[in-house]
Length: 462
View 1 (cartoon, rainbow, N blue to C red):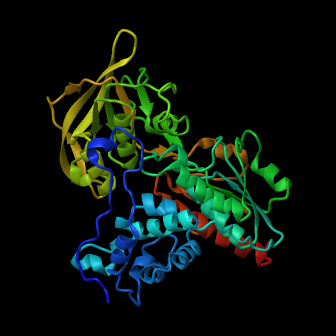
View 2: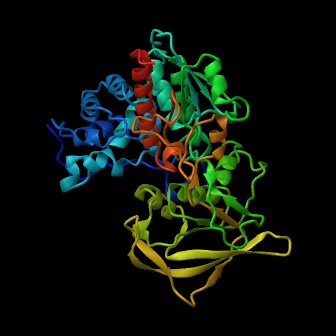
View 3: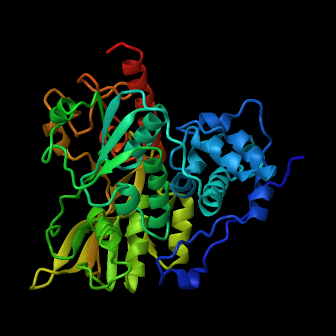
C-alpha cells in the first residue's frame, strides 16, 4: 500500500556549520530505510508522466517498485537500460523541473524524490556489486565520440550496448568533461564520476585523453582511420563576460577557469595550487555555476562571498536546493544588483566591484521581468576577486576540425532533432548544440544520437 504522506523524506546532509570548511559531499544520501519509505510514496501509475519528463526516459515506476521489494540490483539494471550515468544524475539533475515536475503526487503535496532514489540505487550498486558488466558482441562498426562529458559518455555507452566499437577522444588529461572540471567535489565526488566512467570502459568503450580534435587530429582523419560515424559532444566551454571596465584586472576569473583550477588542479586538496585565495569575492550570476563558484570560494578560505544578481530571488535560475545550501553556508545574496565596472589598485589587482541597483519592469523574451536601472543608486562593494558566471558558448575550434559543418551565429552546431549535422555521418548533441544546459539534457541528446547512428548505419542505409 502506498505511503500517502505529502512530504518527501528528508535527505541527510552535513551540518552547515562545518561543511563550508570542507569539500566533502554535502548530501549524504538515503539510508536503506529512508529509500524504502520514499519509494512507498510512489503510486506506480499506469500512465507514468514522470517518464515523459525524463530526457533519457528512465522507467521510473518500475525501478522504484524494485526498491520497495528490496531488489536494488534489479532497480539498477532497469535504470541502466536508458541512463549510462545514474550516480551522476541522482546528484546533479534538476529533477524538480523534469521527472518530479510531472509526478502526480506533486499535485497535492511534494512529488516522489525520484532523484534521491536513483542516487540510492546507483550508490548501492557501486558499493555492493563488483561484477564487471558483460560486453556486447561487436557488430563490426566503429564510432568516434569527441568529448567525454555527459553527452559524449551517454552516446558512447549506448553505442557500446548495441555492439559498436567506440573510442572517445578527450582534450583534457582527465575524462568526464564538465562532470570533473565544472561541478565541485561537494556536489559530485570525483570518485563517483570515475566509477561511472569505469563501468563504460568495462563495457568496451575506449577513452583517449590529451587529444584536441581540430589540432591533434581532424574529423576527416578520423573517418580515414576507419570510423564510420562521429559524435561531437564538446560542450560549451567558452565563457561569457559583461564587457564592463576592469574585467582584465588581476583577480577577475570566468567561473569556468576558477572551477577548473579548483577541480582538475585539486586546489581543494593543495593550497599551493596556483589559484588566488581572496578574502572577499563577488560572483556575478544566478545559475548553478554561480552557486558552485561561490561555495567553492567560501571553502577556499574567503571570509565574505557575494552572489551579485540583477533580478530578484524569484527569478534565480539555480536549483532551489543549491540556493538553500549556499545560504546555509553564509553566502551573501545581492539581488536586484548589476555590476557596471570593476576597480583596481595601483598594481592592477581588484579592489572593488561597482554596481547599480535595479528594479523589475515588463517581462522580456525569456518570460522574466526585465531589470531596469535605478538612477543614482551606484555603489561599490569591496572585494579582491570577481568571478563571472554568466554562461558559456561552444568553443569555435570544433568548426575548424572539418569542412562543411554549419553552426549558428552564436556558435552552436546545427543539427536535426536526432543530432544529425549538416555533414554526413557527423552527429552532435548537448551544450555544443544548445549552449549551456543541464547534464541530463546533454545525456538525452547523446542517447538520441546513438540511436540515430545505429539506425542509419546498421540498417544498411549507408
